[in-house]
Image (cartoon, rainbow, N blue to C red; front, side, top):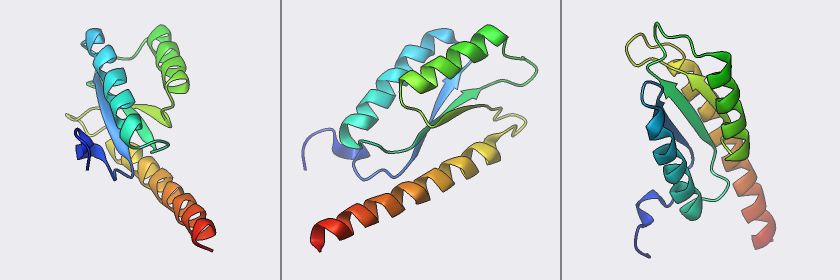
Length: 114
């Protein structure tokens, strides 16, 4: 295997963004790009963490909407590790996407081997 392949074979991912640290957003995008390089089309959700007691402004939400669309995320969820807000929902959503993704992969591979 080539170097930096520790994310190879990933079937789904959740990348956490700390909403109290807007500067970390660039790191999130870098992680997403690195992941896509080794796992094209893998479903990825963005978790806007530490949302507890801090309603995201409409501007923040709009930016996250645009960012997820432009950068190929499946969706974003305002989450809280502290309260558990949306964590279950985000991972349920991701699990469904992962299974759909696996189905597609299996179908594509099946067609090739035929």
